[in-house]
Length: 418
Ligand code: CTP
Image (cartoon, rainbow, N blue to C red):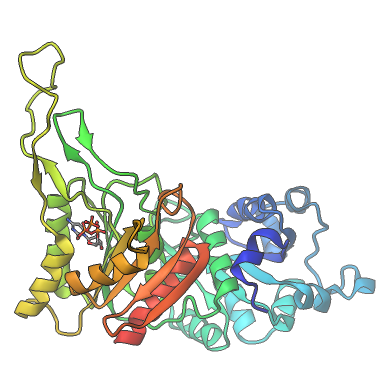
């Protein structure tokens, strides 16, 4: 089943949330909330071991639906086939090593594995376990088998595990799992592993250009699109460096290395440090074109002698043009794909697309994502739409949808250019 993006917002989905027996099972309660708050109908199917961590009553109260674990529960309703057959989406979080092994090998020894075996809808697994278990060749093989069978296995986050230990194997935040799962529902290929072994550098957010120690010139970029690009690239197997300017408070994309910057010149430094080793560079940041020519060392006071009615500006470096120029000089691997962004309003003579065509030519990048902005569109919003432009004149329309979906469309276009 492929649920069109517009329908996703209106049509209630039947979502099965499978819960494995790991300490992160408590996060499944928030995942249930994520889907019910969006109007979807949730059935929770925990494993027997999951109920050692969170009681059935919690899941029943949050979902408003009965909870069962065994194929012999409510046999008259034939639950072991019906729940999986009727589901629009199955999300398993946490997916333990044992649970993934059972699903990978087609076992059906409890209600959750039976439901996965019968399902034809997208099945998204969010693994959580100790790093050694995640890296064990048996688990690596099981993950590969599950992916080969068409299930989506998300990469786990790095961070604090059960005790004081840290490493790969942490369950991502429920909101991240929910968004990624809805992206798979729209596009089953969204997390195909076509960026495995590739290094990508992505800039995100706006910049702050200081006037004095407490004031700055800034813009309305939230950073959401750049973060979504990082999240999707990492799930497609890339090694991601996210150069994050000033953004909303967003969760760190799973698996990405984040370099924090504030000004355009700091962003230029960070991008140029990492770009030479990258296979793909995406400039999604809204970089300030100008900065105050002088930065006051102390707070500008209204009653001082100085005239503050005019601010002298000086031009910032064009980071994207610098990356294109570095490639032309041969300072980067010749295979690098460079992607630019354009947020355009259009005017009385030009549509946003007209401006975007001119920008693509001027910037010399390989792809340009154009969003039409204005009237509260795009900046700070969870959804976006637009066009992907190529130098040969081809244009791909990206329909309105979550920014993770837009990111998936951009990565698909990137992989087609390579
Ligand atoms: N960009 C950049 N460095 C700048 C300005 C922009 O790298 N100093 C990048 C943005 O990240 C984006 C692309 O260039 O990928 C287009 O940004 P935009 O602000 O639309 O382009 P400008 O060249 O500044 O054109 P405009 O006059 O429309 O602002």
